[in-house]
Length: 94
Image (cartoon, rainbow, N blue to C red; front, side):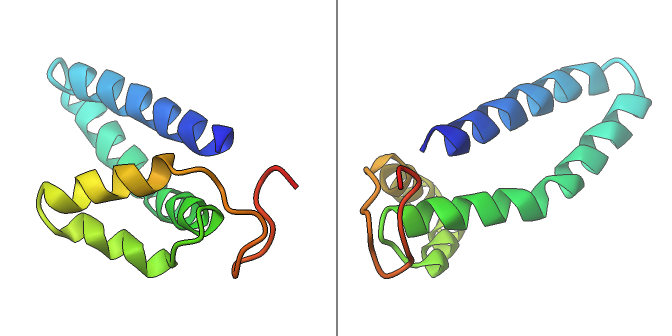
């Protein structure tokens, strides 16, 4: 689970820094959108992998489309311990 949270933390810090700098110059706004687009697919992949590690289906990522409640449910699923082994293979500790 450590790799997932490290990825989330780095992306959050980079997004906040670029967001703050975007208020200074439009160049940083372009960089912000380019970065967001570049990490979209890897973010989905690592989120689905984390759901699989906890024994949930990757389709549960669609819960994030439900305003407020979906985001909270996903956070709850992300912090659950890994089930190893499960229907999706061995967890990250194996």
